[in-house]
Structures are given as C-alpha cells and as structure tokens.
Image 1: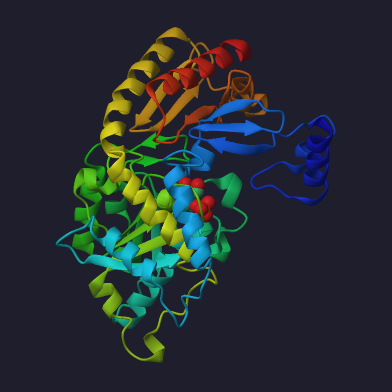
Image 2: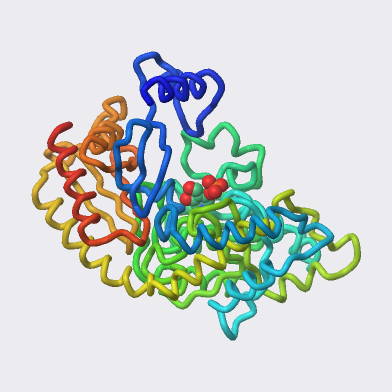
Length: 428
Ligand code: PLP
C-alpha cells in the first residue's frame, strides 16, 4: 500500500495542478498530500487507511453522506440506461421531472423555469447573461451593470469572477468581466447613483460562505427584495452554498419569504455526487426569449442537464423526504450551537463563532482580540492539526469553516468540535 501511495503522490505532483493551491508548496518534497480513496457516510478514508470526518462536506457539496445506498443504486440504474445525452436539440425524462421538483418549492410564483448547467460558477454566469440579454430585449439596454457585496464569492468563470469581492483572487481579472459596483449593506445600495443602469444585484442569502462565514442581519434579504423590486432591479440569489437544507430550510431565501428573479443552485443539488447546476428564473423573464433567432439564449455546455446528475438530484430530494433530513437538521442545529458555545467558552483564541444552520465559522484571534499576521497561517495550521484528531476541514484565513454533510450524527458533531478544540490547543 505504501508503495502504491507513493506512486499516486508522485504522479499527482508531476502531472496535476490543484485549484486555489500554492503549487510550489504542494509539490515540495517534504509535502505529503492526503490521497482520499474511499467514503462512507460522513467519513473519508486516506491512502493509509486513516479515517476522517468530512468536515467541509467535500467542499460544501455533500448532503446525505458518501456511498449512500439509494444514490448509488439510482446511479447504477441510470448508468445502465444511459450516462449522457445532449440537451441541445433533445430532451430526456429526468430533466423535466427535476425542473418541476425545483419549481415546486416556489408554488404560486412565477419562479418556475430552470436552465441547467454544470457548477456554481456557470449557474451564476448564466443568470448574469440572462439578466443582460433580458434588458436588451425588453427596451432597457442601458441596464448593463451589476451590484455585488464586498468580499463576496460567486465563482471563477469570467462573469462570476467580475462579481468576486475577494481581491486576492479576483483583482487581476475583474476588469475583463461585467461592470460591477460593490456595497456592504442595503443602505449603501440605496445611496448609489445611477441605479437605473443596474441590471441585477447578486447576493448569497443569509450568510456569505467564502467571506469567513459572514452573517447578514435578520430581515436584510427581505429589505433587499423590496428595494430591488421597487427599483426594477433583478435580485439574483446565489444559493450555491446555502441551498439544500444547509441553513435549516431547503433554500435560505424561504426563511425571509423572498422569491428572487434568478436563483442559482449547484453544489448540493446532486447530494454532492455529480457536477450539475440550475438557474431558476421567472416566466416573465423567460418569455422575453421566445421570439425568433435573435431572442434565443445562446448559452450552454456539453454536459448541460446530464442524466446521471439529474438522477442523483431527484434521488437526493427523495432522501430528503425518506430520511426527514430537514427535521433532523432542525435537531442538529441546536446541538451544534451548544457545542460551539462550549468551544468558545473554553478557548481564549476563539474570538467569534458564527453559525447559520449547519454553516459554521470559528474565527481565531490573539488573546486580546488582535488578528494574527497573515504569514502565520494560523487557520491552516489548526486545520492541519485537526487531521490528527480525525477531522478534515479548511479555513478561510483564520476562520475554521465547519460545514459537514447533513447526515452527520450528534456524536460525530461532538467529534468535530473536539478535534477543533484539540487542534487549537496544540497550535496556539
Ligand atoms: N457561489 C458560491 C456561494 C460558492 O460558495 C461557490 C463555490 O464555492 C460558487 C458560487 C462557485 O461554485 P463552483 O465551485 O461549483 O463553480
């Protein structure tokens, strides 16, 4: 096994390029990357047979755990039927069923039309292009700008990247994308000039994940909806991270009874099994694309509405019902809060704990509340130390992000928090 593991690592270092990674450090001789080979429930196993809780749900995608028997069986059945067919010029039975299911969460509203793509970035990219083209086709060609929120993250394709508020990631590329202005509150939005040029406002509802788990004030989303509606500005909700039970309801926007003009979904759509994304929009927006060739939406990807992905997404919704996932989550959330309170009380370096449902950020600071030097990379060190205690997770700067599969048990939540506590003690 050791020899095989060494070979895997060598090939990876020689031929692969990892996302958001300092490749120089990754490929350094002394660095032994973790090779993950198997998963079951919330557990992942590495190439040496060690097990870890998947504390960030495989980058915020996994909902019902790994190797879920229902998802596995449904995918095997679909594989025997067909793995992929083109959605360009053809349909398949699962896409309509899934689109109907998505629309069913917004009954009595016009948010009933789904455009499929592959990932969170393309779900956003698609909404941006639809929003612009809609304005061109409905007599408002001057509305070409977007407004996003400071330090936001909406993906890496060029349009999505132009919305990106994290300078370290996006400052090089922003100017090549859409014109975007950034605000930090609804009040700041109200004060912007030339709102008549704005096509849409983009926001992650309730909580910004990549922004160190930044929580929006209660009621802010409803306020934003009211203001954008009054101004004729489209509200584009990015529920790529918050969707699928993560914040306690199927979609975060339901908590403030907000219906957006565009709803972008990905990550957990397939339960974290396959890359599939959905951009939902309103019928009246869709109708502007019904004319001839000049009104068609020329956008799409080879794997759009991939049947395996659709099968996984439908199975995931079925599991939500069969396993009463949302009811379980309602019990997990207070248990997690209690554990977090204890963690914060026991460690002077836990400066703040931010929780929105099953999204947690534990911000670490010096004993007097001072930020650590970036170069100290405290968050990374703590996450690395937590591995020894059986937890895999990633920080954003010095905020430890915990976002486990929703199938996690009370005991496994306790194990995650113990691992973080041990790791903090070891590093600080
Ligand atoms: N939007 C949000 C809120 C995200 O957190 C992410 C990814 O982390 C994206 C969009 C981009 O999704 P993807 O990585 O699937 O392109």
